[in-house]
Amino acid sequence: LGAGKVPDPTTMLAFLSQRVDFDSNRSILDLLEPPVRREDGWFSMAWKPFSKDLAEKLGKEGWVRAWHGCKLEGLYSIMCSKKLYASNNKELGHRFFDASPGVYVHEDKTKEKAENYLRFVPLCKDDVFWAAKWEVRVDRSQAVKAPRKTDQWVQKEDGVQLAALWICGRTAADMVDQYSVSKDWNSAHEANPSHWRSKVTPVSPTSTASTTAPLSAPARRWGKYRRGPAALPPTQHKAAPG
Image (cartoon, rainbow, N blue to C red):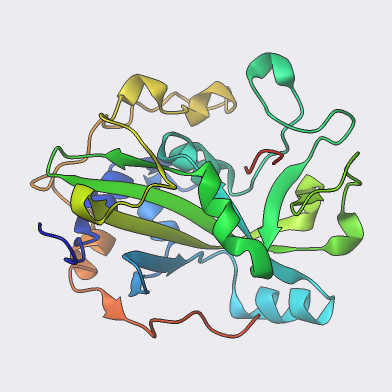
């Protein structure tokens, strides 16, 4: 792909379709609505558990939109758990302010900074790098006080609701300096949900997506993604302290 070309999201759909949701024993891709094309190579996929009724309920309760950049290596685990867990254990490598464990997000006006915590990864050795971030809703009444001034919001786990997964594909020619980029996808670095779901039989996810890999029914159905408005709609997505 040359500069300015928008990568096809089928690669990411294949990657997700090969990973199993422990609750339903179906592909985790079934948790997402079809992708909608956005600007700058981004595609958004609404989170099915975040129903219209739930969105309206949380809106009336004052929940607001926020954004959380994540690594592709953690995406499967997040989707299986269906939530963002708080950063609260530095021995496990969690990054957070002392005395302020929680889920770190950015509000709408600083949403671009959430992308400082994602990383572009080449999944298929096809010169396309993929990254992900989450659109969420947060209850500011469940905020955690930070020990110093920061433009991030720190939230209790129960005060964060997944709303949509955003994925972005870029070629090397289209990459900009601000982003972290991995040279290779290493399946050994992918978080395995079975580590925290000991009551179920561990699932061995396929390590690498393939442009020729068989797709699940949702992936086949979404071969032609929907085109949405380039701009985000009016305000109605685990970042570390920064």
